[in-house]
Each structure stands twice: as C-alpha cells, then as structure tokens.
Image 1 (cartoon, one colour):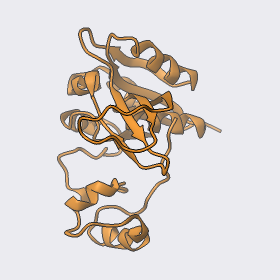
Image 2: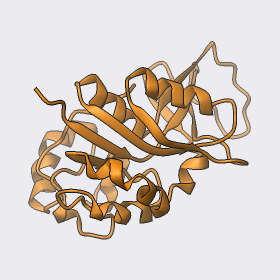
Image 3: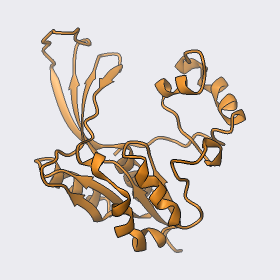
Image 4: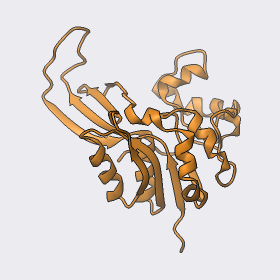
Length: 213
C-alpha cells in the first residue's frame, strides 16, 4: 500500500520545562526541583505525529544558528521526516518555549519564535515541488501568516490564512483563543457543549487529537 505523503509548513520549538512547587510571583526568584528539555512547536508536533502514523513527511521550517538548531533537525530526521527544507538562519535564535509547570499540571509558557518568524512565501516557493507531491499539507498559526497564502498553489486548494474560517475542514482552538469566538469565558468542563456551537458558526467539523513529540 502506498504511504500517504504529508507536507508540514510551520514551526518548531525547543521546550525548556521547569517543574516548580508553585507559580512564581512577579519579581520573585523561586527554586524549581527539576528541569527537562523537549522538542515541540505546533508544526514539528504535526510532522512527528504524521510520521509516527506511517506517513511520508516533508517539513518546511527554519531554525537558528544556536545550540538548539542541530538537535531540532536531528530530532525530526530521527522520525524519518525529510528535513531538506528546514533551513538555518544566521544571527537568529531557534524557537524556544520556556515553560513553568506547577504540581497540578497548570503551566505558563513564553514563546520566542526566533527563526520561525523568518519563514516566508519564498521558502514555500523553494519547496514547491516537494509540496506539490503531497496528498495533504498541514499549516498552523505559529509562523507568519503570509507564508500560508503561498501554499494555495499546492494540491486540493490548501486553506490560505486570508480566507474565512468556514473554508476550513477542521479548526482546533486553544482554550484562551475561544474568547475571539465567544463573548463569555469557557471552562474546560464546557468543551462538549462548545463543540456544536463552534460547528454551528462554521468554524470546523471536528476536533482531531493533539500530538506532541
């Protein structure tokens, strides 16, 4: 059976995770008992999830010229992902996400996009031949929006960022982003009731599972 080919145009991040006894207050220095590093970013997560499910995956992304760059590329390659179009940017940091996690699992995250912010339509054009061979292309909003409009030349009318949400098959909204869709705060326990309302507004027809690498 032919393996599906999936293109991912988007972000990569290195997660810098501190496990703290509680969230620090402004101006406070707090000792954290443990620390971990991991590879993430919405684009890289999509790419790894697709590769784990058996797809042939090509990634279009950018890393910096710092200590995190090689590890990011090597991690993608370790899953069999084609990193031909993951380029280094001189003078830029890679994308990093410092994360503080408390004992309940609640977290606070800072995102430094670094080289991700330099992903452009020109990068999509450079990878055009590889992307045109894909059955599906995955996009996210963790990189500049204009690169997504460059994907409209890819097969099957890939959704450009400038179109309306109703043109999407599926939109997955982070909890705090629901404020842009609904006038009142939404609790996690309300998610089963929110989904039909999202669909009624034409914002998607389902909620795919999330994946992290």
